[in-house]
Image (cartoon, rainbow, N blue to C red; front, side, top):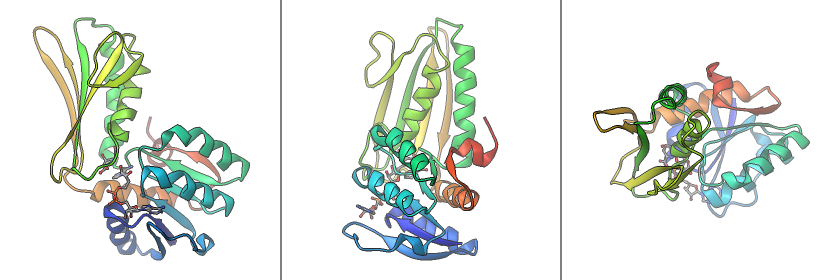
Length: 234
Ligand SMILES: NC(=O)C1=CN([C@@H]2O[C@H](COP(=O)(O)OP(=O)(O)OC[C@H]3O[C@@H](n4cnc5c(N)ncnc54)[C@H](O)[C@@H]3O)[C@@H](O)[C@H]2O)C=CC1
Ligand SMILES: O=C(O)C1=N[C@H](C(=O)O)C[C@H](O)C1
């Protein structure tokens, strides 16, 4: 499979190694300042760029009917617009705030736990995410997906806020520590005990492998999909 990498930073470079190991060819590496390129050389594009660039990168793929997988976070105010454009242009698209298998299982566990805990008023939920200091957005896309999973399944919460537990808000704390690849913890606290679930990435390998598997899966398809479709879970 011929792959275009849109964003050639930490994730782009990690994806390149895994993709080549799996027998794929990288035909395009697009980074900051690259405007003139032929995306149609690729069978599929993988976007891990920056919040300000993701929507344009993705739209360009739709205009040229190149299937696109995006893991860039912090641009989701334009997600619905991207979905509409994908359908209009008969493109193929997968966005995931986190491509690792472990986190996608964690998303499902989080939803089931929220459903059970909704009946137990004595427990208050909070969330913490820890990432490296180079991260541009906060809270992380993964923390937002986890928060949405709780809000959809727990009667006491209607929105999430950074460091704010007032009213029906689910508080998220975002910490930035050296080289941490990504740790997410959901905590339910009562007066008598604490229940925690946590996912801790040891490196970027899991994110990158998931993105390549998603690209392999998407290559011949048309439509808008999620990692639950790729992994057949949820
Ligand atoms: N969904 C997931 O599983 C994961 C998502 N991410 C997200 O992926 C994104 C990238 O993460 P990293 O690789 O760690 O960041 P990075 O900062 O190492 O790489 C981003 C690259 O995008 C480049 N860039 C800037 N403008 C661009 C443009 N217009 N077109 C193409 N590239 C452009 C930058 O020069 C940089 O090389 C972030 O939003 C991060 O939150 C990161 C890890 C996993
Ligand atoms: O920026 C990162 O590094 C990561 N970003 C994603 C997010 O915002 O959730 C996924 C992962 O946690 C690493």
